[in-house]
Image 1 (cartoon, rainbow, N blue to C red):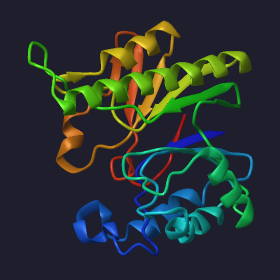
Image 2: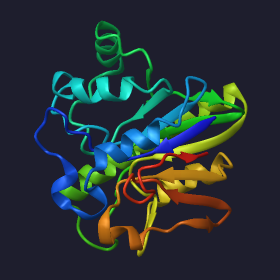
Image 3: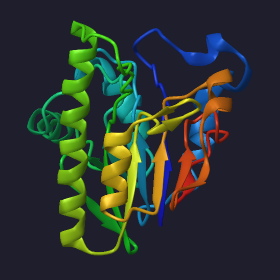
Image 4: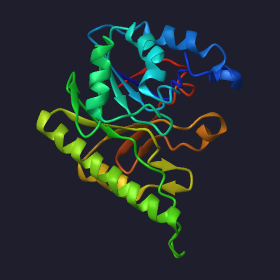
Length: 234
């Protein structure tokens, strides 16, 4: 079976435990362990970004080793706080060197599990305001969204070769109250994606998430604190 969860924010060696925020995050490591313990080696789990606070692969090693204890395959997507992220080759060599055998990288590619084709990319908050002069910040946003659109397209094209239903996982929400990332949504519509999962939003910001059906696509927020630290079945 295929499951998904985002924003674990593990910090076993980084000194940034999320417990300090209280509320749903209090005792979050135990909650994550309980949630992942239900998965088996026959299952795959999409980790939709912000998996570890580690500033490098070495800093994140303890977090990866914690996740490796659970036998499911992990499909790792980049989030905005995944500072450990390196090239796919470097990450694969690191995983191999440390016997982290259940990790796969979801980046410019796709995977298939039980008839579901897993596609995705980080996404981007494209907040350039119409009618205003361009600035270095807006130019950077335009460059980044173009790159993320290309990565999503490459992933979906790879998924089309695998067959199955294309399901997209993003870190950033493509829709938000008062906000819509048209370039990414257009790619979802072009490839006839019917389900899209995303993370990134926490606390009060979750109330502004757009979930459910919107123009033929079902959107769902899967930030760990939003789903009670229990992976959702896709």
